[in-house]
Each structure stands twice: as structure tokens, then as C-alpha cells.
Length: 251
Image (tube, rainbow, N blue to C red):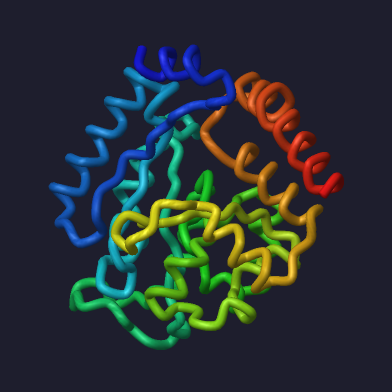
């Protein structure tokens, strides 16, 4: 109801959708409890709650493999009962270093890259480690799994201090679909997503066509239905984009 009111008041507003999440430091019982709650909400409000994720710093949490039984339980007759949008490979460590703190989970953080692909997630959060896995990068392209790239967050947290060498441009220039995300701007003290776009534009040497592609990616790799996506791109975004291009070309 609230979303409908916003759309009526602001016609250019596209939509609001939410991904439910839990944290990857919980025991099986609590993890499954939170996951089942997400399933219940998705079943009741599929147009608003579109998926499930497990967050928290990967190097300090359990691996995706640790919760594999819980994730596989989401399959019913070969179909996911709720889409997965998982954080994966948010790390600079190589395969052979066991970085997690839990003795019952001797799996390196980078291994989450494999599980994310095998689980056929809808989208991947961060995904830095994929640049070390050329075969998995090809699978991301083939399976049309997008990676959320958080430029400012990565710089602040020290993942990629020099944005000219940021991993996101490697994924993008190798054909992996990426979308820009602000991650946690409130925590980092800024509230303007344009900052991430500007840093990617200048640091990666992008052009107008690249900006257009990244914008379209944002409207393509998400939880919208085909009909919602068509309206979002053709009726709401494209007129704004064309107006922007005309304004820039006339300056």
C-alpha cells in the first residue's frame, strides 16, 4: 500500500523490494529459523520480499558450505522456494588459507565462490575472489549471475584502496554482469549513491556507454518480474536517460 502511494506521488519511482537476511555466524538452528521466516514472508509477499542472503564479514564467519543442507532444503521439485542473493568471495585471501575462526568449518573464504555458483544464486554480493577464478567468471557470464560491486565500501575497508586497480572493472571488462551498490553508506557517513558511480567512472576509465550498461544491469539483474522490468526500463528509466544525454550534449 505504501509503495503504491509513493508511485502515485512520484511517477518516476520504480519500486521497492527487500532481501531478507541472516548472519553467517549463527548455529544451524538459528540460521534455519531465520531462513524459514524469510520463506514465509516471501510466500506471503512475493512482490516485496524477493530473496534470502547470509551476511557478515566472510573472513570472520561460517562458509556457505557450512550451511549447505539449509540451502538445499530450499529446493522443492527442483525449484527454489525463495531465490538466493548471497555474499560470496568478499576476500583478498587465496584458496589455501583457512581464514575463518571456527574449528568446525575448515573452509577458506574464497571457496564460497564455488558454492554460490553451484547454488545458482540470483546475484552475488561483492565477489572479489572471482577474479582469481577464470572458469567461474565464465560461468557467471553463461548463467547470467550478476555481481554487486561496492566501490566506496571496498576502498574504505581496504579491499581495493586504489580504485584504478579495482576488481570490479576486471569483471566488467571480461563480460561478467555487474551492478554498482553503495553497500552501507549510512555506516560510512555518506548518503549519495552518485559517489560510487563517479568513482567507478573516473577510476575505471568508463564512458557514457558503460554508464548506460551499468544502469541497465541494475534494472535487469534484480527481483522484478519481466513485466515490471519492461515498465521500469522502457517507461521510467529510458526517458530519463535520454533527457540526461540531451542535457549533456547541449552543454
